[in-house]
Length: 350
Image (cartoon, rainbow, N blue to C red; front, side, top):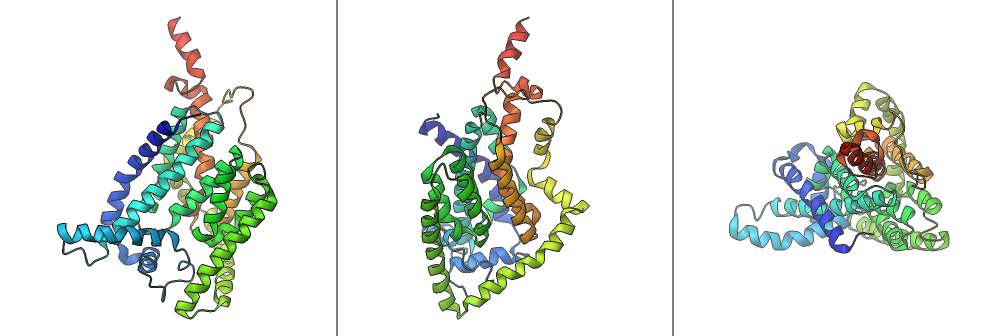
């Protein structure tokens, strides 16, 4: 088991990988055509009226960004006084918060890779591959809330396979606050998270998290004069995306969207189809939990119609599979990341 100093190094690696590429997105993004980003900037300012019902209840990341933006405004007032009264401090706060949260999600993916028997080097390369995705740059650099939902999925996967009760509890408490679609992940937690938390405890936490989410929604609805029925209608409207998403998924453009999630890093997984990966006996297989989590992600994709962005939620499973290939597949033995490196070095002597 890695010590906290080693995990800190991995976390800083994740922050470093994200910070540079996401900074370019933060500085140069054109907000004029992005309703999502403008909505979350409004939520951070406490302006809920006029914000889409799909986004106005996701207040955790905007609230943290708003808290960080205040001291940033003081700095801006001294260095760039012309920017202090604009959205720049708040946009910078979102960039900082989302980068730190997404890096934390990557750290839990790294730990999940180790639990599947991957070497630390292979696990580190796996999370770098995940953080090189165009969606990571998008999520970290812009005023969005997807980073928290990525952390929820990373905690869910880690908690279930490690038996960590605190990770699963954090996932359940954060989930309903992150996105309403957490309702599709909850059954997966009850089934595959029983080793970490028995289902009665899970149900109690789910009830608590649901009550907190309802309280937030009730308070916001009171601010804007909305009725609970609007939320129900909005949820049902997402069912209309099913046919559109299915047609898009089985089209050339849809295939391109899926490929763009992890880009050419998909090729490492395809290498597993070329011969067996020589996984040593006793090492855990990905298992039903991983494939069931992918199925949950597919549900998110079909209901959202944003195939690539929702497909990125499968990053914990992708990272685990990617790191296993790097650790054991003969094609990557020259990297000396796993046990197969011993055979490579021995052969070199002969």
